[in-house]
Image (cartoon, rainbow, N blue to C red; front, side, top):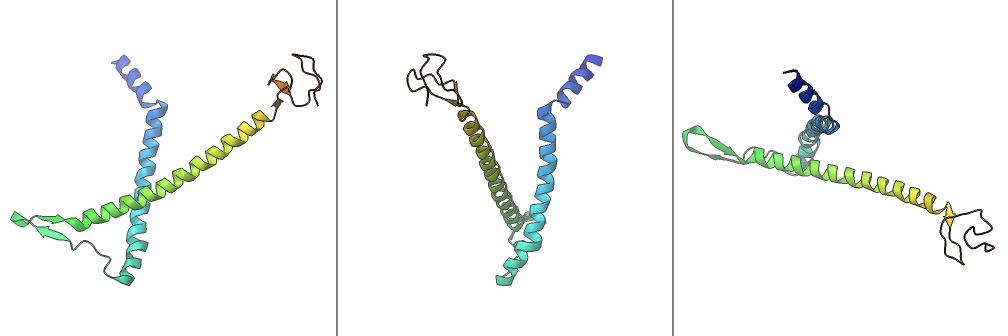
Length: 138
């Protein structure tokens, strides 16, 4: 039993599991924000044009059951809004990461130069003589 508890502790406290748990919690909170945005901001704006309520789209079934297409449509709209926001957010984060990588590559490339005679590329920028072929550098 002790070994089982140790294995469970190791599994539960792994970085991937903890990251996933944080992602699920943040995702749920973000879902609440998107639902509030839809219900409190977007639906009233649609209400200025027409009826924002889509809950009236129901199909009666036997024994008093109904299929509520309005709730499904609302969930789809919430999903599309959330997907759009996440897409824009991840796109901007990826762009910032790409800019950071370009700056690092430029800094790395700027520390060395190539010898025009022997084509050795590990020369320092301040070098005046090539250590490989002993040529004078400009």
